[in-house]
Amino acid sequence: MNEKEVEVLEIIEHNGRLAVDTIAKMIDMSVEATGALIRSLEEKKVIIEYATVIDWAKVDNDDTIKAMIDVKVTPKRDVGFDEIARRIYRYDEVKSVYLMSGAYDLSVQVEGRTMTDVARFVSDKLSTLDSVISTTTHFIMKKYKHDGTIFDEGDADKRIVVSP
Image 1 (cartoon, one colour):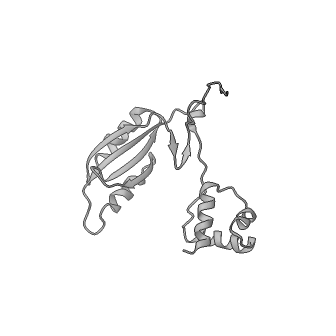
Image 2: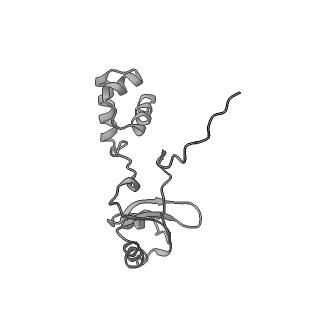
Image 3: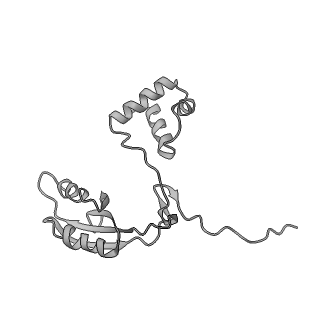
């Protein structure tokens, strides 16, 4: 991967809505060359998709329950953790799956309409898989930061400025 490709990736990672001509100016390349570079990165699946970060807590009718589930599994010969990870990420409830170091092997983020939906997913689908040894479920109460985006700016300083 060359320096210009990395520059483009860093730019669009923070703002995927920038026009190609703007990106071209930022990296000092022609619009045509920049467009071709972006298409090449899309074809190679380096750029997988363009996403929008939404603060769902500000949406009135959002009552989705989110949970992080630590999963301890037995890896299988020749495929390691990949086979069980693929089985888990195919469930509609699963939003992300990560291979982790530490006490648990996989971290699985799931969503459901109710806590019962999430609990049912864990008891009926996840924990019944052959390779799964144990699970620990953590319900997400509030999101402060996600993928580098801060959701909670905190309280503004309301003190009166006093100067001599």
